[in-house]
Image 1 (cartoon, helix red, strand yellow):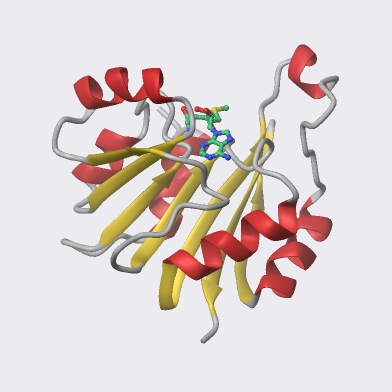
Image 2: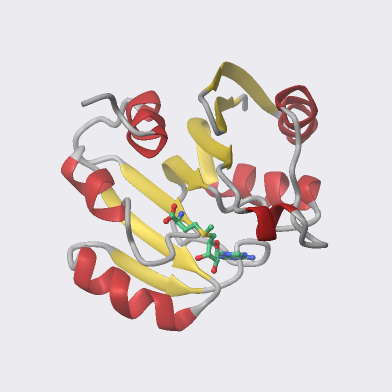
Length: 164
Ligand SMILES: C[S@@+](CC[C@H](N)C(=O)[O-])C[C@H]1O[C@@H](n2cnc3c(N)ncnc32)[C@H](O)[C@@H]1O
């Protein structure tokens, strides 16, 4: 069976055993367990605390924080960040990219996916829907180097690296 965009985004991160990985906007923890299976020590962050109760069931070995990605500060920088369909909602985008940049160690990787939105979500005010070129510029302004951009039927995936 072909990989889903969520699995492809995990593959793009090329997680090494024991790396600290942030599941940014982990929600119900749909992909937190897969990040752990890939070898990561995962931290899941979500602004909606009740979702984390489900995430704890989906992946008990991860650490969780109910927090806003725009203001939360990790005690130790991450080796990589995974953000699937989260950054539509963390605004403004330059502030979100800057906050995530600040959570990574130098040369840390960042993988994000946009798209796959329902008709309702697409029409919502406050739902950020960039095209790849536009989002590449957001990441470059924050200090990231773009490593790869992939488009699938309903998403685009971007892999970037913290430059310094
Ligand atoms: C479309 S869901 C994606 C959830 C998960 N990544 C997945 O693929 O199943 C977006 C998630 O981002 C979370 N979120 C939105 N704004 C946030 C913020 N400022 N800080 C942390 N989480 C946020 C939402 O609560 C929601 O769980």
